[in-house]
Length: 476
Ligand code: UTP
Image 1 (cartoon, rainbow, N blue to C red):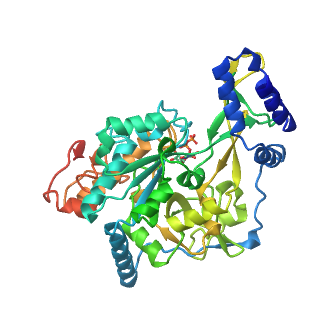
Image 2: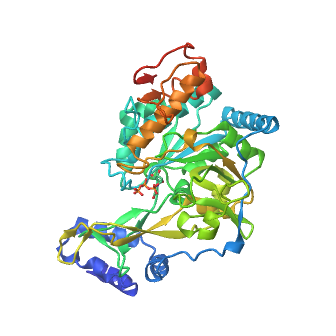
Image 3: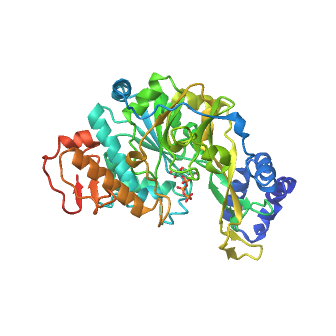
């Protein structure tokens, strides 16, 4: 009883006492579970978020257009001088890889609601011929990098409490895909609240509706206890191993060039703390955040918050003035992450979602319309805190096709096509003949395992020129 009264007193101060409405029906275990979940919540912080992002409407105030300027980007090399500079950067990145100073952070804690796949998104069979999972493809790139540079970068995989166990089991089942060193760390959670009232939703009689705290949760989670409480934290372990630079990417992009030495080299040559890869936005209304300067500080403005006049503005050459679309590929210095977790708090954003919940009559409701606000931090909000940064352009055809949806854009079908087109191009560069449709796409599935070749250059040494590709092919 004392526990119930204690909890009721705390919850009452924050208008959340309804969380105890089924308390009397619960057994000891259920009460313990519920009490633990309630105690894990920072109610002062939650009150502020509800006031600002639920009751306050939650729309970020649009930045005044006169405070925003385009940011300098290291563009794709056009001249011999630029190509030579890129080569020097590549060498610097290769040296860092060979010295074992590069670690890789893969964030895979998202719920993958749009894809609607039963399992962590990283386990989705995305290989167009092999049906290899996203995790397998990423892991094979690391194994191949290790062969090439003599040191395999350690991999740190962020999971969420919901998918941690399944993710770890998947890696174990596949003998960790031959990785030398992989660690899993769990991100934090935030409660989901009712869109109208700001009340925390119950997922069950003894459980709150909790969801991962966004990819911005990576920073705090890296410094927290790693695999189910094992010491040291991932961040501390990186320090012990001599890892200084982190390559960060998200699980859903099968094309990502993991630990790309040129990007790492550009980042290190500039002594940057955080760096971004960007692609040219295809249209003013494309839904990607753009990297800009606001009051002379670097920042990402989400597509929905970029003033329309700026989104549509074009230079004399006809190119969008604010074109640098972030593709969620970053480099970080570990020292920067340490500095951030010691002080900076990333802001929370709101995401309006359909969240099933327990109604007061004890029935579970599956809402047909979005009914809840989730609170998420975004990794790109760390950028304004970096003293030095580099923004590097890459080619989206080569490096960006995320798996988000079950059908339509950014779906398995588009990822398969993009992978096949990319690998078809590698084969052509290696002297093979690959059929193309009139729009330039290849007419059947082509896949190259990273263990066979990590790039077009390597593929050249692995196949006979004159190879004619006439049917689906998987090179492994
Ligand atoms: P998205 O924001 O696209 O979310 O995450 P999602 O979970 O993949 O899909 P939806 O929105 O529920 O349909 C982009 C990347 O960030 C990771 C995801 O795993 C994905 O790699 N992420 C996202 C996390 O690791 N944690 C989070 O809390 C959110």
